[in-house]
Image (tube, rainbow, N blue to C red; front, side, top):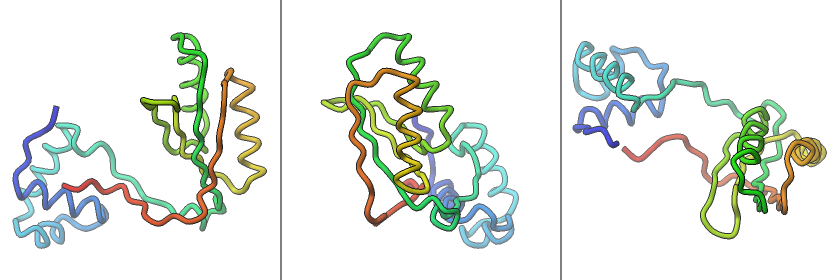
Length: 153
C-alpha cells in the first residue's frame, strides 16, 4: 500500500537518499523547513516503513570485488521444499546482492559481486551443490553505467 506523501515529504526523501549523514539543521535548511517538522516527518516515514534503513554505500572495486555477474537461473523444480532450500541458499550467500523471481523463460536473476571469475566459480559450485538447478547462465558486466539506490520520489 502506497503512503500519501506531500511535497515536503518528497523533498526530504530525495535528500536523505542522496546523503543521510547530513545534520538535521542542514537537511531542514535544504528542504526549506525547520528542524522539528523535518524530524517529525522522518520519524513518521520510518514508522510507515517508507524509510526501511539507513546504510553506507560502499565501493565494491575499492574493496576488491571487481567482478559483477548477472546470473540467470532456470529450474525444473517448483515445489515449496525446493524453493525454500533455494531461497535459504541465496540468503546465506553474501555474494548475492540481489535476487529476483521473474515471469517468463528465466525463473530467477541474481546480481552477484565477487573478486574475479575464480571466485564466481566457487560461488556457482557451492550453489549447485546445495540445490538442483536446471540451467545457469552467467553474464559478466563489462562496465557499470548507472547504479543507484535512489527512487524517483
